[in-house]
Image 1 (tube, rainbow, N blue to C red):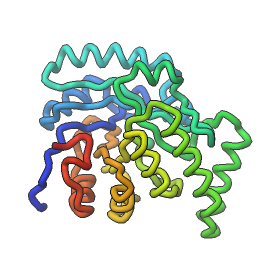
Image 2 (image 1 turned 90 degrees about the vertical axis):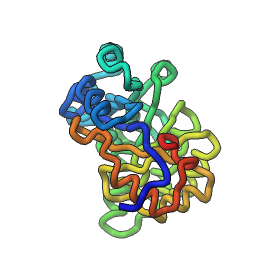
Image 3 (image 1 turned 60 degrees about the vertical axis):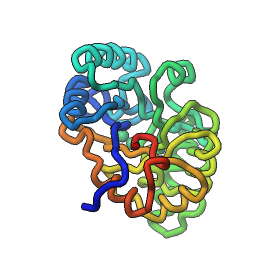
Image 4 (image 1 turned 135 degrees about the horizontal axis):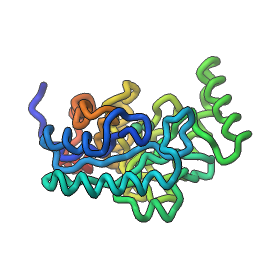
Length: 248
Ligand SMILES: [Zn+2]
Ligand SMILES: [Zn+2]
């Protein structure tokens, strides 16, 4: 691998057993320490994720907070961020993390996920259908416009620090999202777990003035800090440390 012109000091996207990860908060923080990370964020899925993927309810975040406090005591060398990966649950950009909780969390990630309980069942079902039909017929434009509206509104009207895996399974207009992110200071994730991210997407977003966050999206402690794929993409796209919120 090429010598990296930047050093990644934080993993801003990790899951625990509170959503569908396999480890505890403490396990992820221990792993972060072993990886030499200075910062790790605990970002379990919001409660609207279906099939047991999300946390049991908003109150789960207070239980997570207690574990974060314990982990900070056990590993004082690691800064542990109490966070969430919120779901976008309407085209107006509403999240499944209420505004009061968004304000309290150290970091709020937000992402579009296909299997989510939408505010309006009919609209959620119709968006899912539009995406499925687009994938089958190649006519993705309609679904793409609706997905983009939802995620752009989420960025504009919430306290969101990072948009997770933009374009993963649900196509979006990268340029429009990057513009919104550049305006609000929200970062776009380069996700190390999924394979959808392209160098082109990063270049388009950078041209709009957006910054990036590298995330492992670890669902097990072993994957915490595994950012290699995201780093290679960032290097290939010519990013420097000033373009990346968790690098210097
Ligand atoms: Zn996600
Ligand atoms: Zn995730």
